[in-house]
Image (cartoon, rainbow, N blue to C red; front, side, top):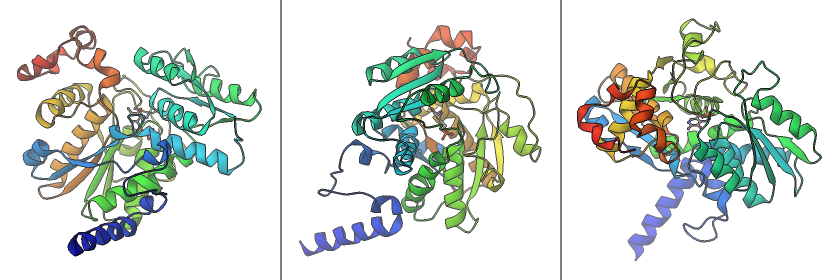
Length: 369
Ligand code: PMP
């Protein structure tokens, strides 16, 4: 019994010393957290066995699909709501309004339900019907609006802002430029990755939508490692950030588009701005490579991942190959394929995107829809 107690004490000490994220918890008993919001974060770091074998590196994926709302965006959702509460912008019974392609809305829906706030969501009408249905099911008022550029006043973000301005006791959480989003990853995801790898991490990579995940984790890892840990942006076609980094800071007009939902950016957001200069480089990932990795992760690792996660895994593979054998590379498994199955595993959809030929013969058995 004594050795069990000694083990437990050591484990608790390691957890509390290793990461500030664990210290904010009010545990009512061992393993019990107080409500949904405390179930956000502390996700496993999964070693991708086949990919690690193939690259000779340790390739690790942070299982963000295990958050209550099913994605990495639960963390940002919780932090933007807490920030509004702390600033006195949101009183009990108030309304949260957000422009979101889906996952932030789903995270906000869970957080708002558990805290008793109303939620209004504006989103581009190009997103999956499954995501819209789920938001409505979780109690949100949803407005799908035409997908127009940010400089157009009818863009979903501006519509969300105006809606919040028209109500009392309402806040536009503004995930793109509200730095509480980045703060979520400086305070939780970054410290968790550092603690889980015991500091044995050489590189980090992920794609960006708002930039909160990449910027926050990069900031934390750079600070805690004195700049030793490298960080790379993963960027899809149609996003301007890869060319921005490659050209040393010029915003070039975007061309092309990508199948990855929630990813890619036409500008440097306020979440990205303070940390984009910390990046060591970027990798451009084609849809062909992304879709193949969706199928490979399923077949080789048993992981059922959405396209942005698969894109991140391709980036982790390319960073691992660039860094050389023996390195540890961490990426983000943003969400699962559940919300996109009718696209990613559909023969008709793959053909419509000219991606049918990117699925290797031995993986065709997964095209079941
Ligand atoms: N993957 C998915 C599936 C997402 O919905 C998002 C957010 N839109 C991201 C990745 C990007 O995260 P971030 O906003 O922190 O850049």
